[in-house]
Amino acid sequence: MSIIAGSYERFIWGFKLKPTKHDADTQTLTLSPLFSYPSHISSITTVACSGPAAASGGSDDTIHLYDLPSASSLGSLLDHNHTASITALSFYTPSSLSFPRNLISAAADGSVAIFDTDPFVLLKSFRPHKKAVNDLSIHPSGKLALAVYRDECFAMLNLVRGKRSFCCRLGHEASLVKFDPSGERFFMVVNSKVGVHQSEDAKLLLELDNGSRKRILCASPGDSGTLFTAGEDRAITAWDTNSGKLAYSIQDAHPARIKGVVTLTKNDSDGASEDPYLVASASSDGIIRVWDMRMAAKENAKPLAETNTKSRLTCLAGSALNSMRRPQIGNQKAQKLEEGLNTE
Image (cartoon, rainbow, N blue to C red):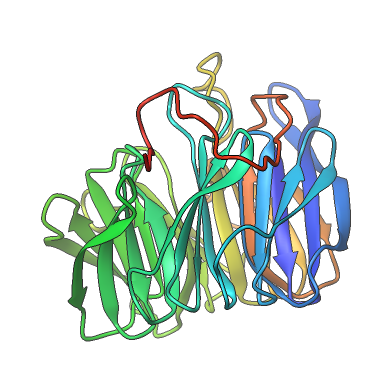
């Protein structure tokens, strides 16, 4: 498993999560450094990774790519039309593949770009809205995405045709939007509350509210309707989105506000019931921690692994490293051989 984090000081941090001890009662993990260097010329605003591929976007309007198995930089994607800070990055990886098929980026100028990943080449760019994108989430089918904007708008994007199919004004600014793994529901974060919506018609099913007035800054869907949130209250909270109840929480998970949380899952089923439910978190004081969320119900839950980057972290992403294929950057449009994202 790999974890990458971006920082305000323009550094990208890469770590590999490795077991160091495992017996009947304990498991110890180590976050081993893969790389760290100033890949951007200004602060990093968003990161994404899937399998061996990783990407970062910054306030310098650029997207940089990384190959995790070789711990190397692949350079930047210059062939796109973003003219403002990159605000969201997301890989689309079909369930049948361990290597991502597409990378979707969004920016503060309202533009969205769709890249093929084999090799990395721009397939389509469009500007479905004039205002800044706060967050973007791809449906598991890869055919559509949801986006929330700084001007309180919410939109559905047709990724096959590269156009906006629906847009409405919410009346409040949503900072995050996430599909659940099934694609049947999505979660929308507004300040300290999370709305659980039905994907088919965007109907609000229920609202999650822990009573805190402190903002949620990051969220990560888990299995079986679980949603992890974290933010200014410095806690990691697990929600049962089927009942709308708080399942469990790690209070004071970090000494500073949490800027990233990611569910680390394995695609193999061997011993899955025995594997810990791993969740990684990163705080603005530079600390990254990995937790076994089964221990969250216990008092004084302790992280399985921890590292201190000593930088102001802004974002976090994680990936199960299931493929050793090296990502490529290409100069021509790649031919699409399977169904899914296709702009032809």
